Length: 361
Image 1 (tube, rainbow, N blue to C red):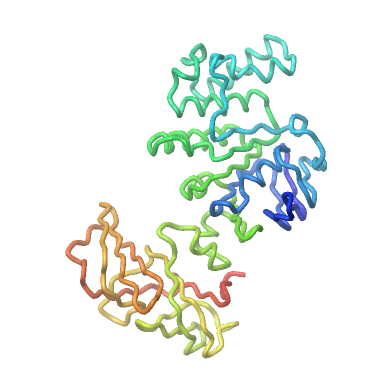
Image 2 (image 1 turned 180 degrees about the vertical axis):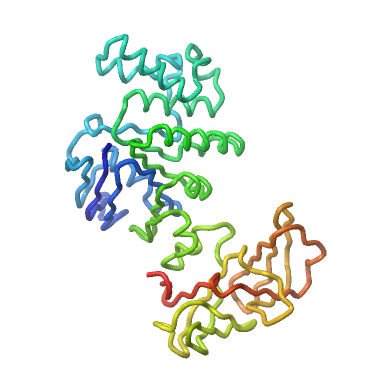
């Protein structure tokens, strides 16, 4: 088992282009950590720094208690699974999986045992004598994962491993990776993705990267239910959380905020919610409900998308406001062009001031 510790880690390229700064993160042995964030936030760069493929220009990286800033990639006890599979096209599945062990001068018996074990774990037994070109995308990715397993590393690194697969294969392979982690509970895995479903379903904890640093770290549901800032609130969840500008008009056991389309009650306590304070009210699309009573928001439906189990309502933005989206269970027809009033339960209402949550610190 091996944990990792990043202390003040930075990455600067020539010309003083700062990509990452002051990254502080403890990864416990046996965790499956997922890095997410917008394009260009540095998540793949951070993964490559851990692998030793990018030089760390500031701070320290420890693996299993040892500082490895200047340790070559091959000596870090790490195996990396790339987005592009990176299989040797002229080698069979067996030869691809065995190649690193041959370079390490392992005995034929050790190599055969390791390949057989990994092939069985990944259900690759029938394909061991095939070339990569005779495999599907999902099977090729499993071979790439198997090539890492046979090395028995301390840490597994996955760099968007499912991004080249179609939707159905992504689901199947994601489940296989989850099952693989369950079969190796003592192995530490770090996984980079832009897909929220992968992050929410696979991760022990999610690291959200933004503005060259870490915006929040937490369990998947913690980030969904308790975002610490507006960026995380809108990045986690699909469609994104709605943010409606308002002003605090009453405090007490709960906080009341006046909005353009009505008033809303939040379970946010009175601390940091003084009368007259300008705030953004956050409501997830799935937390909106139709109402005939006092609304949180009233607007005209511009577009509807009936997805079967849910219907998405897109409202016309008025006066330069941000567009609002509601996600209602079931099928709702004939609502386009209609004025609709929405409400939300107080414990589903988030309040933000200056970009930061007033409830979750």
